Image (cartoon, rainbow, N blue to C red; front, side, top):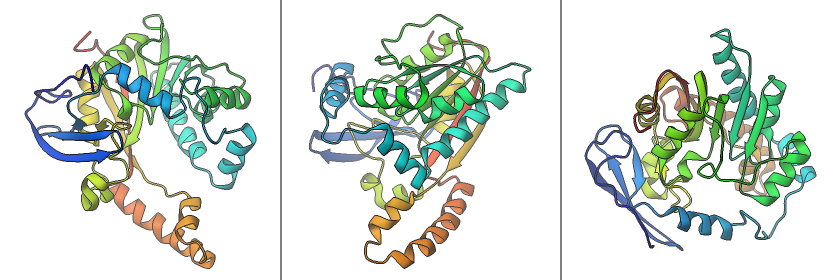
Length: 307
């Protein structure tokens, strides 16, 4: 890949790094290094922004067609039958609103980066936020507008133009793991937030139980789609570096029933049993910080270290 950038130290804390694994995909072979200090793992060298934009365009982002075009009806039917995004959206939006209320602040402007189908934006609206949403996927923006009534902006976060201090809350849900320059994103988030504004980041937990057993074959080790592999410690360290006080770290695990049904095809009576056992196991993983997802909330208290 042209214009790659090699990192000699950890992009989060500048500690020494060591080789962890290599992962071969149809897009090439990718080296993954891990920090000896904060535990952040990442694809190294880093692919260019241009490479990533081309990669996502080929996956159906931007204006290119995809094989299965989602509709509002199909998206809502799946979510109603097996709630997943709605539950995450309710939790994240409520936590962001609560963190602002603790300061005596009312919900203000809310930036949803990588808004998808709009479930998070919808919950933010219900909490009283004024939402601005970004997404590069044409089909997702169409469905999002039908669900929320909001016209999403067809822009990457890198290209988004916003006034300094104009937002009270920013959400990055399932997006930071895809980003080439994580420090650029944190610097920009800090600039866009007002003093005391809150940032929520939700993404796969590198320290999840499956990864310990499967290594680079873990379900979220998928370069070049995923470039960054955070645990709670490294994600907290990134926020602190960029002028945020960490207000909460939560581990969240859930297995959609449709996944269980697919795995137990032909054994439908076992689905409720496996679902119940899975909830107990996942709860235990979350308590041990081995959950599938990690959510970190930060309040802006200073300027970014790289501003």
